[in-house]
Length: 100
Image (cartoon, rainbow, N blue to C red; front, side, top):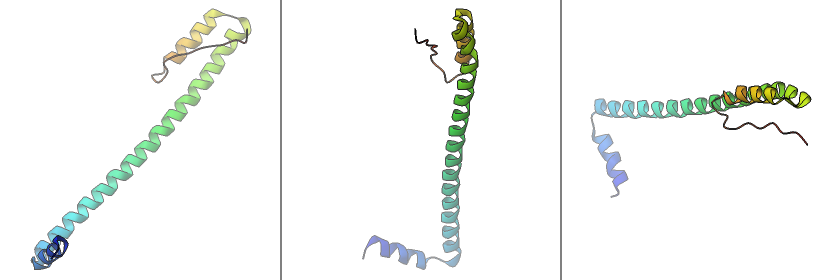
């Protein structure tokens, strides 16, 4: 006999109370696993949304701040815009480029 058949025989050899305990425990473990997977999926989606929103805010902020720097060729405005962008925790480097 295989181990699978002997496991089934052991299950049917248990009292109904022990069978119920085992089935209940397996159901609880199954529910916990499903809840953890759903929680991870939700957290992953939320993190992606937050990062996308931050990226949009950074782009808008950089566009507003760099416009004056480019129009008037002002290094002070460029430094100020760069400092504001570097304040975001996910930004490592900033560059304002002109076609010249």
